[in-house]
Image 1 (cartoon, helix red, strand yellow):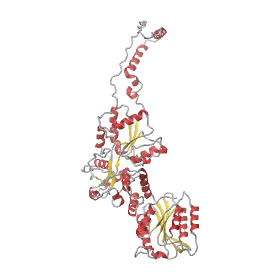
Image 2 (cartoon, one colour; image 1 turned 180 degrees about the horizontal axis):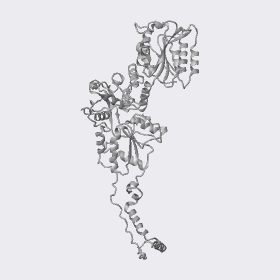
Image 3 (tube, helix red, strand yellow; image 1 turned 60 degrees about the horizontal axis):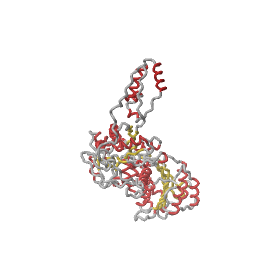
Image 4 (cartoon, rainbow, N blue to C red; image 1 turned 90 degrees about the vertical axis):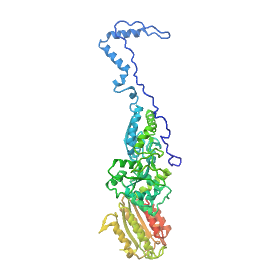
Length: 602
């Protein structure tokens, strides 16, 4: 990683070409020659001549030995000879349960490796060849998704070596829960992120020029959940390169749907294509994953790999060593990593559909040779975390009550020629009703003065799921019909503060911890209640006293016309919400989508 958190250029294990040697010393195949055993006898042994400079063996020792031999039973003598021959002939370790002297030095040195599924198979075969060169190089390879491996590391179940599909997966490691810093390692392979497309859609997606285009503007794209699938994660990262932090209306609308209807995994996207090749939308996948799918499914129309003309990001499969690994285990792991850079190992990985870590090579997909890759400059760590957080916010279900100003001034002209304020508001509400995710909950109040039974507000729709049954159709259908026929509600003054407080109390009382609970207020003016009611100071005091960090209900205000921006901002700030001022239909639609996207709290 560079100093600013941006991933450095990958260090290629395969840059240094050389003889395919492992660097390990060859084992000596010849066993040690046993010393000859002296013949057993009861006669005193002849005195051994003393070489100059040597001390003669003490006589008491020799006498003791002769004395002991005379006392031993005769059957012990040949048994002792057998034991000595076994020990001297290299059979000692075999007698203790081992196979040879080399293996005895490798006891308990198995290296555990967690590898992302698509590379686990070829990696295990490659590491088996390492074993041929180094008897101590024993590896236990487990196929584990990068997300699961990161969780295991944080939970204290870390492998000796981790090979995720992307260096960006290190973002998920919590340094406070590990014994050291997990650092980006050398890349052992790569595979660019492309669009997997059926033949009937290939022409359409072939024409797109950048990764961001189908995500930010064009339709017809599906993704897997970026939290679990790295190809979709990097595709989303690429869509945010050079983009502003705030998401616009069109992009926001698309991403809300994409996040809510994301597949649980890439496996599900491939399965959907297998079931119906004509209706499946294009989706992000790595080139290698598409090639492997086509090979495993010869009876299915092959998927094509569409390469973005202006660049993409790639899976880089880094070899990451556990920071707590040391001693012989670390030496074995490092030597195996080096061995993976040899030509033999390169061939094994490229045959499995991977490119080398510089992006060279690549498989033939649907009879099309591998395209040239232009690597985009990746997001830095902070940008990546912000992008993931953005996605998670968009797919979080919300529980929202829309509180809409229906006072008489809403019939006045808006800054948009030919449209009243009410017409502008209706357009925004209809847009919002169409894009709210099915898993959310939404309801609506209108407010002005003296609505019903002395109250300044009236419920026109309860808080329900948009896809819930409601009369002859869905709740979403009912909301849009209510919006279309809402002109009849107009009239009265602007009882803003009392209505906000009543809505806040209701949402706190019915708070659901499984959702983001919020109130979205549309108004065109200041608080104007002839009957009195709360002042701004009283409302702010009540909201402050009612705040419960375990039940946060945010108030989002959208003002237009003569709305008091200062008062609306104070109300939003008191609850951790946001405030917007809008005038045109585009403005109000845009800020409403932003309100739907906003998920931060007080």
